[in-house]
Length: 274
Image (cartoon, rainbow, N blue to C red; front, side, top):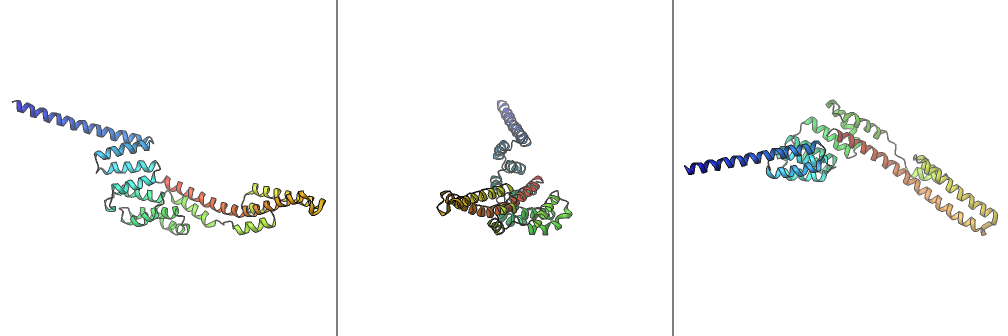
């Protein structure tokens, strides 16, 4: 009789303990989900790491954890954590596969994308979109122009925006540094006008012209012995050389800013669809 009572209490305590563990685990999942949905991605990642320690083979927890890092803009960590959770490409689930390639694209892990994307369980239609996004993020706009017609039928929300950017990229006429240099050599400041840098162009014209005029006045008044003539002449020469060099840099900055703006717009379009 005593043995039966003891056995009954043992089973009851074990069941209660398991029920308590399940209750705690489920509540922790709800809390982690709340943190994620409220935008507290760093905290949700901590909670999902703790949950995965308890249930290491839970694919939904793995996805939620990696997504927390992704949403928190920790792309390097998200990619490395994914690869540690799934050492083999063949083990990737379909949702994790898509999240993984999205991170590779936005993080510019192009070698990994090229190496792994074919082996992941992603539909052909979606793969074509991801391949387009990869070319966009790599800045291969000639390839983008070729791939866009191939993906237009998918009606993906990124296509219209990327098509517009592709048109802008194709129509872009870069400013030539040597042209800016030649223009400013002939007329100070004109090279910066050529690059759309009007304020600096006007400033260069006034400074170089003003100092050259003061040098002319000094030499005209006192001849070659004019102190002011030599001082302003040296200043004018320095300003002139700076104006020529600055015009070349202005052309380079103009071109860089265009591509940086295109890249920024492209990333915003792509990220908004992930």
